[in-house]
Image (cartoon, rainbow, N blue to C red; front, side, top):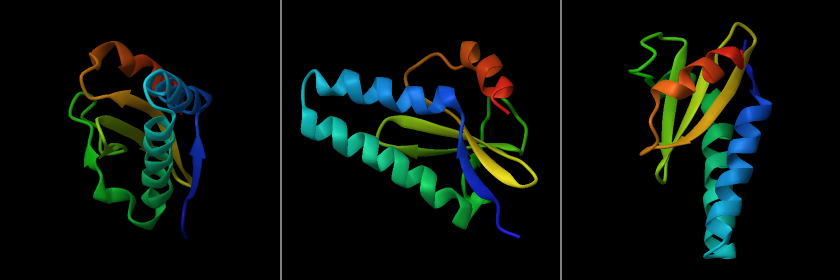
Length: 104
């Protein structure tokens, strides 16, 4: 049975914030980056275990895929795949863990 894809409100806000930040310099690039993040997330249900396990969490149910400079963090659940966060690769990750785990 295929799992459906869902976005946590925080992850959706992450993508909005990323686009707004990039838009300060380039509307076109902001749109391209946001679209690529969404496309990456939408491809996850096809092969959810393709993403690597998030090393800072060390739980096989938390995985990530990369697009541009961003980490698309998702949680594998019984019936759905939850996009929990989208974080810039240079951001400190440890403070993000509680909100990622509370998204599920």
